[in-house]
Image 1 (cartoon, one colour):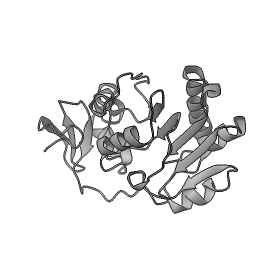
Image 2 (cartoon, one colour):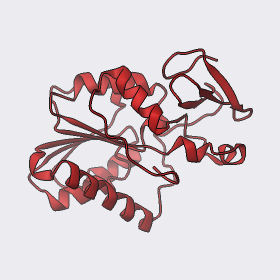
Image 3 (cartoon, rainbow, N blue to C red):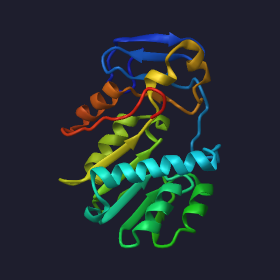
Image 4 (cartoon, helix red, strand yellow):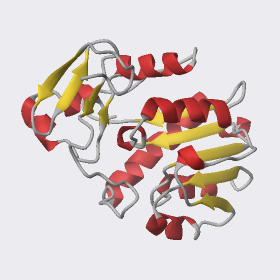
Length: 220
């Protein structure tokens, strides 16, 4: 089975049914195409209120510590879901121009309730915006895409300029696929599983040269 990320043939099946393969070349994993009927545009269960608060606080504090919001004039969030993070940023920083891209119509209805936010209801690969952004956020998006490498290449080319930052949050492959039992419990909508080494490999293929990979074994 060819790797759906780096296109290497150096892959091995990790578990049959749900047919998850691990690539020895890029250290990522993926589900066999058509092994599920995932559709991330529909209304899916979101994290509970407390978990959402913790996640958004982590994102906000990480960005504030490493970038500083005073240096950010424009933000693009891809796959905003119900808009919890954008709502939090907007509350703190009314001066930042914010755009969201979200394919789920139900989610877009919630996003449009946030003041002074441009909402685009479409798939990221189909969007053409003549804007570059200081910060592009993809939180728990990459693992749902049919072709994450192609999408990151598109984001790199279309939305980032010299000095821009891409912030990605993803589940940890080494936790989700720690054994076959955990692999069976992995959400069916997770089409790809990225390790720390794996996400660096993907970013290097695209052309990124300054990556900061952080996280922990048990979450993202």
